[in-house]
Amino acid sequence: EVQLVESGGGLVQPGGSLRLSCAASGFSFSSCAMSWVRQAPGKGLEWVSLISGSSGNTYYIDSVKGRFTISRDNSKSTVYLQMNSLGADDTAVYYCAKDRSDFGDFDVDSWGQGTLVTVSS
Amino acid sequence: DIQMTQSPSSLSASVGDRVTITCRASQSINNYLNWYQQKPGKAPKLLISGASSLQSGVPSRFSGSGSGTEFTLTISSLQPEDFATYYCQQRFSTPPTFGQGAKVEIK
Image 1: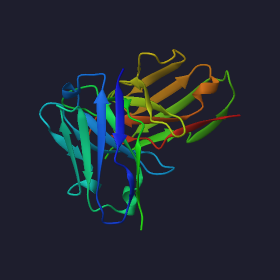
Image 2: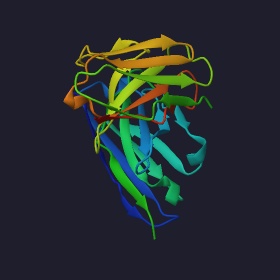
Image 3: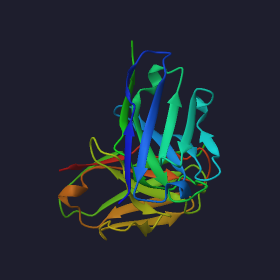
Image 4: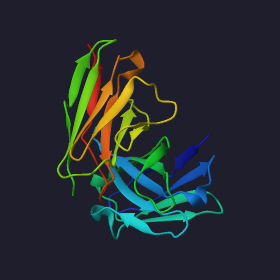
């Protein structure tokens, strides 16, 4: 059974940083691209970032480029999202998601339970 | 960016009703369209990929159709556990984008 467990969310002041982690199990982690998708309170879903399985190629939406960094440690079956220069617009539940393919074509078949990031003074 | 527009944004229906949700893309996305179900406080769940392929374990009362710019999700006989918000998502081009959601409520 696929399991994705996020951690690292919390309350942070504007301009601050957080590092999210997602521990994966139940599948061949290095063979699957991984993504972070967020959902602001009461709003819809927004793709934030993706990292491919073996090559480590990355994708970011424009609004987080230069501020967020996605990475993975295949030896630990864990994907990370380093978030810097956080603003109120980044307040959301952040979901870790597993892609069907190695290279990643935004075809997600499993999601974690999410971790809440709140940016507020 | 490709805009995905769902209609209706919300609907009220009764158990046993047939429900249809439409998703329109601002340009052709072939069949690169997924449907997700999300219940309050929970993560989305993949129902249908490739516009019409039902995921393993998803009840057969769910079906998807369409290609190009217009797609539909149909629930043939609404069950109590189906009351949720449904999202379409295109993966034809970056950035991948979601519809705004369609909330199915109890009548």
